[in-house]
Length: 220
Image (tube, rainbow, N blue to C red; front, side, top):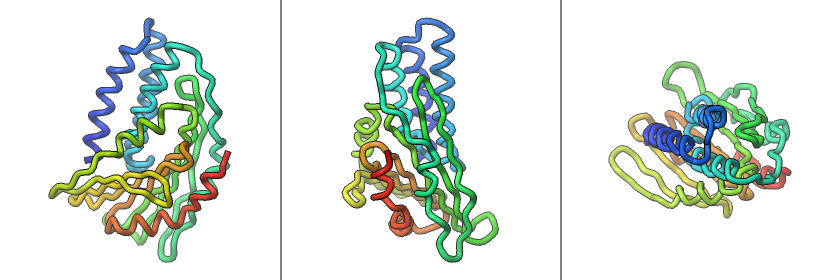
């Protein structure tokens, strides 16, 4: 389910980049490079399917950037977000949190990520928590939450809109891979993703409680 979203959006929005104001090869190459950087979030090791809402917002931002200059707020430094990533719960281990603040297509992008694991082996429960600061793209929030309005359930899994402590979100679960993901928009700028493997999707609620959402919302 998530993999199909990634593949489809990547192909559609790559074509979009080629058609929205890139009048010369240098600009077109820069736009495609930015899109490829966004696509890396589609990998499980780097925040799973961030690309679903993120690519939509990036495409809108690229279009605006090519049509007219826009002054946007600067993204928070990634070192401020690292402490938001919780320590491992009892019985689990956690990798060292990672993060970066990079220049992408004329604006700054900040993201942080941490992986968690319970036990050893190929099929043990794992978790990943990621945070992206979307403040640089004014259309990001509306594009993302609009994509979260669709709800579906099949024999393969489900996807649905959710609300967590007053914050809009989206939850998806793939039965065959036991892959669950929860996305939440915090303070109209921070995109929080919790990704679980080999766990019941109900465990998402326990993991989100480990993240200090109020502290995250207050960061500037």
